[in-house]
Image (cartoon, rainbow, N blue to C red; front, side, top):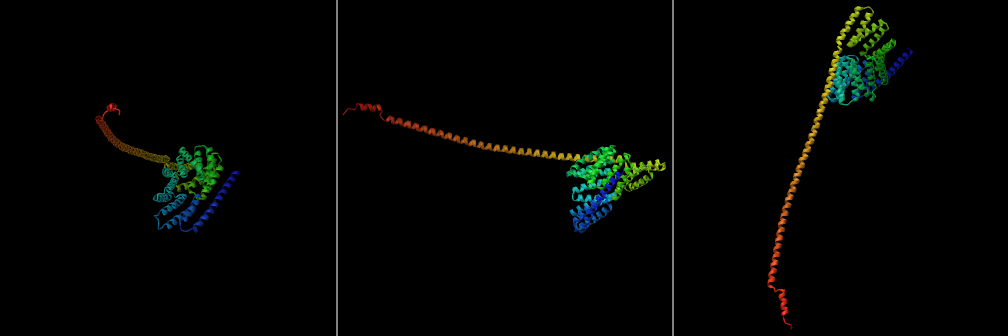
Length: 487
């Protein structure tokens, strides 16, 4: 018991340090706002301040400064409201305003403001902004227990993030989708989606999201009755949240640890964990968690046989759950209250509360919610497959066009080659004819020369014969010389 109190003292002290640091940061940003010129730097300071208040769950401060941010942004873009910058900055401050409504559980107003932000982002074709708002819309619809709409918006956001190859935010969306499946008790798919997100967050070192991953896995394993695995994941989650100084995350893990203490019959230890969680949720004015926190305390008082305190906590939880239309929590509360009334012999109220339990069970219609989620998931997968098929068709078309273009070019080269060969052949044939003609002329000239030469030779021979016929022969001369007398 002493060890447990020491642990809570250390945890509370750590959270107080977080608060002090946060206060220093907010004071510095407020000072910047007061001295900054009237430009977008002041809007950036407002947004930084709002994010700190949102992360700390300080609803009143977030409401005040997010409202000022919207008013100031409208003021500086009063004469230029249709410009790209005006639409972008208004879309950004609308998101912070919507977060304030979300923290105060005014979900309808949050949805209205988020849709205004979405329209601004669409008008300037800002896909990153659109993806962010789609995710925020999914979160709000999940808080309303409208799981079909929640997963629809998550999937629209996921589609853009996948297109942009934004692994960090893809991991967050996979976790959110897994969380929806956990809510409709499809634990197999819930684990599959969260385990897809886990390695990405480990790689990027995103401790905040790692904390959510491990915490959700702990919740799932607890529901499956594997308390050892649940505890391991809760411890990992708490370490991550402590490292990033996320107060609500630390308190949430402590409440989940309280569930394990209950199963281990350590009721007083569980009660301390639940009370710590309640005090943190009250301090941060996180209305969405107050019904759950009081419900946990009430069921623990029942196990401790303190029915008076149990009734008080049940009534508080019912009031919070009614205000936020948390029908799933109301169903559990009326069932537990009906059991408590029966134990106390108050059968009339036991019947009334059981009737209310049945009524809320019918209103939730978990099967219908699960059906909507599955239909949306199937539509997304079909659209994704259709897109992939379309892209494949386009790719095949491009390949075919490339092949056709290549074949066409080859055909042109072939025709050009044939024409070139034909021209060359024609040239060679022309040369051949010319050479043949020249050869023929040469042969004719050769024949003429040979004929002339023959005629000349014949003429010479003829002349020789004539000459010889007129001149005396050698024998005749010799005879004459012989017969001539000597002197």
